[in-house]
Each structure stands twice: as structure tokens, then as C-alpha cells.
Length: 484
Image (tube, rainbow, N blue to C red):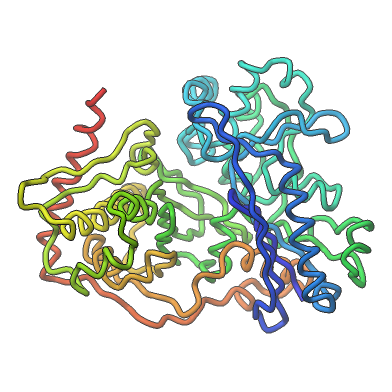
């Protein structure tokens, strides 16, 4: 029996997975986010620990024999957060989360101090990453920074509380801007640019490696026969990729969730250049990945649902089952700024092309297409860095809409595959990593992909019209950016 624990922003999810890779039990404990100032986003790490205890207590109560039989535990987690520790591992301040944007000035300072940032880490310095956040603390809370002995990412801190070991995996570490991503080790130059030294960092391991054991007190609390082994684990997107079996070079998927992700697995390190393409280590050895991100994917449709006062199903029911032509209206989905390719947290979205005759259905279709065009931006950035996608799996809540999937396929010019069971999430991938850490099985044997149940090819008749619509969409960002 194996346990996966996913430390998300909105909750802790724990799943029990048996030898046949069937999820036999799951429990989620909710978390809240503190926003003391505009652009700030924080959580108390101790809340993560307490929520984890409650989640596993619930599994103990509902499935005591299965929990007692757990041999390995894997962790998945939200990336980029900065947990600052002092003497004896004390948390010095709330964690600055991945969506905290206060450190914009520090991004420029970091890249000035570390001119090779993009070549070595594979990423542009963004406020969401860990290094600028720590620089912000050093500049604005010097009394806190003076007490720092260690800096860890969220799931590394959770491992520390559960095992006493300060260890993190390569995929999670890639999101800090301190990793030499090609060499898979901490960069002294990157750390120096943040006023840190190597001694402040956790040890590094692969996601499939054994990395600590559950402490004796918790082993007893949950009735386990012996202290389970912890796997190195993975950052949230890498854990999701492990759950989907996206572990081989060229494996690609689109995640049409609250935010949107375009993922491609690579067999070597490919820096993302200047298009806000992320280049990270994968959670499995000798593999990397590239990733583009749109911040408001399904969140855009949810916003439109709130504005219209209609639920999403009712809005989609006003549209045909397959796209007939692009909407005459354009929508820029920059409701929370945008990541790829603009790296701009301050730009905002909007509708363009409204007339007296514009219908609600045309505006709904424009929302779906605007998100698809944002994904196209990510594919263009990947192509310019040398990675071309011709087919991809599609997951996330938005993928349940045949219309939205068809629009995506035609806008991207890519065949998309819908999956029978593609919604397991990071906790399931973490459980797979736990199994490999315990048994030493080959990654390819354990990390099998779900069955594909449908393939949606681009519609030839729409390729020209959508190419023209995308060209008009590309003009939106500079126009919106020029508005004070």
C-alpha cells in the first residue's frame, strides 16, 4: 500500500493506492490563504502540518488496515513558496506563496546580480519564484532575514515536519531559481545573488529516491506496521505528469484547469529563452520538461459564469457542439495578468469587437477561444525554443467540454486525446513515486498512461480562419498594456 500527499494552495489531499494502482481512499482538508496587502499571498506552514494530520487521521478512521499497511509515502506540492527557518527549525514568518507578486522589483535585482540566470536556471526571474521573494525579505524585513538558517520549499518543509529530514527533489527545486537545472545541483552564483549560502539549502535527490522515514510518533499514531519510506516526491505539475505517465521524451499534455499548462517532457535541458517558458527538471531521473502557463484558463469561464449569472453548462448549451467559425468577438484572458509569454502580472483582460448585435453566445465562445489563443502563445514560445508539439493529452475540468477541446485542437493545430482517467492529480503521482522508492521498480513499469478514449483532430476548414483570428488576438496585449 502506498500513500500520496499533495500540498495544494486550497487544501491537503491524501490518497491511498494499492498494489494494482487503484485509489482505495482519499481525503482532503481545506486550507485558507492570507492576503494582508494587495498582491500578497501567504500561508502559515503549521496549518499545512495540522491539515496533514487531520487528513491521515481521517484515513486511519475510515481505512485503518490499509493505512497500517503503507510502505511508502510520496509528497507533491505547490511550488515556489519561501519557508524561512531559524534555529531548531522554527518558522520565522508566514510562507510567501507562488502567487505572491510583491517581489517584482527584486526580479530585476536578482537578474542584475546573476546575469546567467536564464541560461543556468532555464527561467526568467518572476515574482512567483522563490529567489526574488527571499530578496524581498532581506530588503524589507532585515530583522527576519538575519535569523535565517535554512530556506525550503513548501513540501520540503512538510517532509521536515514528518521525518526530520531537510531534503527536496529536483523538480521542486527547479522552481526556486537557485538550481543549475542542467547539472541538477544548487548554483552557488544564484544563491549568492540572494544573499544565501549552500548551507541554507536542503539536500537534493531525485523524485524516485528514498528520502527519509516517517517519525516514530506518527508511525504509532496511524497504526503503521513500520515507519514508511518517503520518496523524493515532486512539484505539483511534475507529480501530475508522473500520474499521467508523461515520463518519456516528447510526451505532452495540456491541463485546462483553473490555470492552464502546456507540458512537454524532454531528455535534456532546454532553457526557455525570453518567452516565459519554464524549463525544469522532471521528477524522474535523466528527464527534464518545458512548460508554458496561462494564469486564467477555466477560471475565465468561471468568471464569465459569475458575470452572466448562468452556470457554465447553461452557457455552453447555447453554443454548437463543434465550432463553425471563430467568434466575431475577441477576449483577452488576462484576468490575473499573464505568465507565458508576457510575464506580466499587471496587465488585465477584456472583450474587443462588441456591437449592438453581439450575443451572449458569441461572448461565451470568445472566452473559450481567448483561452485557446493563450495556449497557442505557449506553443509558439515552445517552438521558438526548439520544442514542437504535434499531439497531446488534454486534462482538467475544461477538457470535459467537447466544444472547448475541439476549439483548442483547431487553434493549436494539434491532435488532442481525451483520457479515461486523467484526473488523479498530484497525490496519485506522488504515490507512484513512493512505490518506486520502496520497490526499486523501473519507472516505465509503474508510470503507465491512462487509456485514451477519444482523439480530436484540428478541423482543416477552420485552420485559416483561426490563424487570422489569432493574428488579431496577438494585437490585444500591446493595446491593453498601453492603457494606464
